[in-house]
Image 1 (tube, one colour):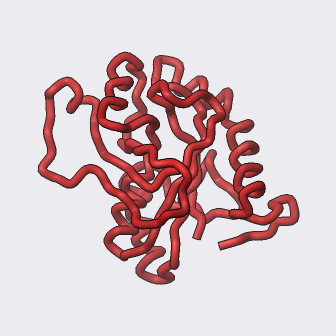
Image 2 (cartoon, rainbow, N blue to C red):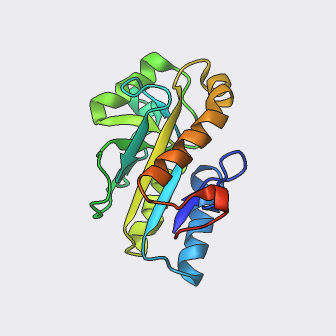
Length: 187
């Protein structure tokens, strides 16, 4: 099953699950309870902490939930905040960091790379948490839409249409979906 956040990041070949950690967790849980998929593939955009460039495509089977306050030594968590899927589908092992907030302090957010995290996406950690609970293999494919800096939102808006187009072409080229111009779905 292919899923995406929704609203501005909707694809005709993917089921929308909501934006942010909470809505995506609720809706992904609902899907798993009533129509459990054999595999979950999340597709969407991500912000780069510096390693990846705009329009790079990144595959991942690992995610984390680390907040900026942790980098300043202002918080800690007793929770397991790094997850890894057992699937071997992905070609890359980048850790995708997730939060309900989009980082805009590039100097600070760049420090996430010292923890092995190179990009951020709001939903991926919750999707992986739900998949783990239901013992479903999961992966994510992301396209970089912006850097985690002061112009993150403006750059996301500017690059969004091209990101959606390039990500769709990548999925078609890699036979993950069929030609979407024919309105065909592959789950």
